[in-house]
Length: 151
Image 1 (cartoon, rainbow, N blue to C red):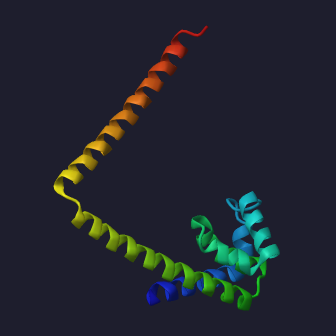
Image 2 (cartoon, rainbow, N blue to C red):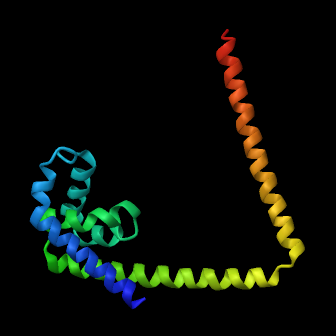
Image 3 (spheres, rainbow, N blue to C red):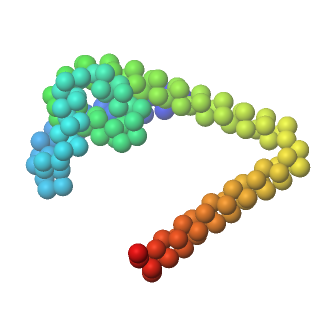
């Protein structure tokens, strides 16, 4: 957990510095120039500051771009550090413990199940996949019939 938390905090700090130093240059380049998503996220950071950094830790895409955008938006590093350290701590400890609990639970469930239960679950999964494939094929055939015989 310690490595996860420290890596999250250090990685985001590097992202902040890169955003602060190279951000304006990057935003002037073609793929990002005038990008609505980048401008919207940058605006959220300017308005909400630290809380946006904290929430961004738990959103997949935002986790990657928020540190750089925070540096670009002029958010003070001290504010950024407090919120992203808290987010890194909550995220690192939370997800590590969640993975541990799920792994332990899975091992216990598997050891408690008998072979017959596992076979029953496998049959149910296969039946579900077969039903979904049948339904998809039926929908395609119906669409092909409508295309072939328009009214």
